[in-house]
View 1 (cartoon, rainbow, N blue to C red):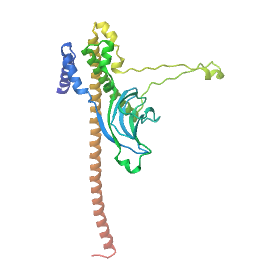
View 2: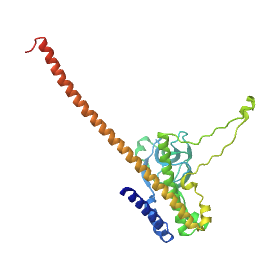
View 3: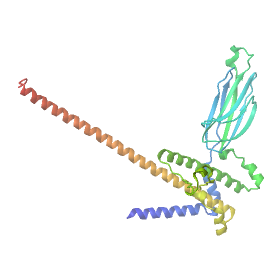
View 4: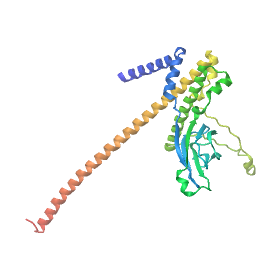
Length: 322
């Protein structure tokens, strides 16, 4: 009797927390909290690239989703009689090559958009001058300072704010929306991968031809289908809600953000339940293995005792022992 009451109280408390979080008076606190939780620090790497006449490629790989913006900033140090080439590729089955640039010096900024799910690699080669003596080869190298921004980190929100005349709060909301969208995309990717491993869910179509149509006319009949599937917060028409409830632009964005955050919470609850289910299955399997080993041990002991008595009885019948 206490569990339903506790669950109802927990749900009521969660609704109260959501209402207090998404009230207009707590917008700055919400922004600060979510940025603290979801903001990703910019990662950079600095390394030394040795020069060879036939140099191997040194690649830095980063995971990306389709249609994600990738900004590569490479700062190549000075080095005489050396040529550094850069190439951006991905790990998809198509082995897409986004761009290739020869002889980069100083700071070079490149922008690409990923085509497929997988990893994008930034590859460098440091070519040594062919006229340089081979004994001088090991002493030649260049320092490369590499910075890779992906997704929301690669967007210049200051330029967007200047172009669209956005206020500071609206700019922060735009950035926060992109960060939350990246989190949702990542959760969708994990969910799709799990569905691909476990089962297949899909929308199926069948195009039936009229039975009275002659068979020779069959190959020329077809229909074009444009399919768009929206799930969760993406399926809600927030413009209609804003018009119905007379919400401002900021309140509409907060309502949309509330729906997205609720999806994230639901997805985390699902992952938690799945982990608990897998943990229970693991514990049950371990217990069964232990029981099987214990019963096998008892069976072997019983079989050994039976063999001893059986052999003793056999030897007595043959008068081999008293």
